[in-house]
View 1 (tube, one colour):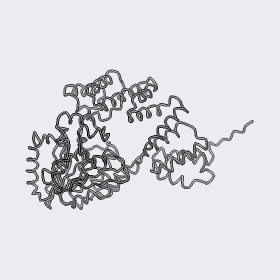
View 2 (cartoon, rainbow, N blue to C red; view 1 turned 60 degrees about the horizontal axis):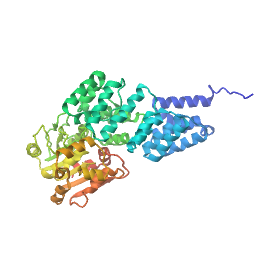
View 3 (cartoon, helix red, strand yellow; view 1 turned 45 degrees about the vertical axis):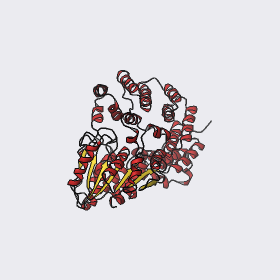
Length: 502
């Protein structure tokens, strides 16, 4: 007869329980310390290797985490949890093939696993393998949750095709058929692309059915200083930092359960954020307006900032202004209310591009501007280059800036981002208005243009490369960076600060 050992109160069992409790609480520091002190004879047990992999991955040690997962599986760990963890790590590492293989292995070992089916569906969707994406989604249970997931997938497909009619149809299906609110990425921006009557009707119906959505769909621009305590931790950290509580902000971020590259960059930016006693003028409080003006600086330099479609400079403009205030620069922050890449101007200043130039020139004169710098992030970078040239800026910084948004160019480089906006711009403006190279080439190097981009993010790299050979254009690839949202990395490296001091 096999002997059954009661380990419920053994030292090893107590150790494992404490380790898992610390992980659940998000106390990575103590969990890491506990793992470092583990007795040698326990190191190769699956009950330790699995939590060790979790801690290692959350500490950013993905390679070590994968080694622990492999050892755990060899030691007998065989449950969905270990496969899910491996899949998440591989996804974060960008190993697409191994990620898909892990999901398929999970399905083979645990048929019908909803995590694997849903993630594989989204994976196939990202590869434009639509039939396979739908097949995986169809295999999910016929419950409210997964019905909502399938509708969410159809919503994403309609956006990818830039099909406004299909978007309206699926949103109406969601309002009619789904008691659960599906994941609807970029819903606020998507609604703005619909005809006004459709937009208002869908907004009102969503607000009645899911009242919590009303604020999220309307409040696009809320100052960090006006945020309530319950807003998310990253925004809380920014608010603390703006109030000079840098250490408190860092502690708050260090307690996040998921440690990502962006979190690390934000912590780095907060570490170099100028303190209140170094500011040479008052910093702005973002009013949420289309035009936000700082107090006048004291050195004759003005920074003109063109935000992207999210009405931010990849970070809240209050963070950007902190650096400007420390230099003593005046600053002007613009938002693209017309969602035209500023080609049609800024409606709060003028009804067209030329009138906006005149209005901006008047603001610069009020600031007694002797030197103009322009910053543009994402689609705002496109405008920063064009306006910078016309306003005789000395230097322009584009953070992941597009340089050509004609249909042929973006198709050739595989730029399928923001198709709804891109296609509307292509319908509304001429090819010449969507292509910056002729204007940059004609400038012959008078205006210095710095293009920052991730060298591992081909779309942004191709946009920057398009202006190669034009005098005055300098390329700043961020080594190993594989995302679009580059401004945090630029600030953390000191690139933005150097730009302000140029």
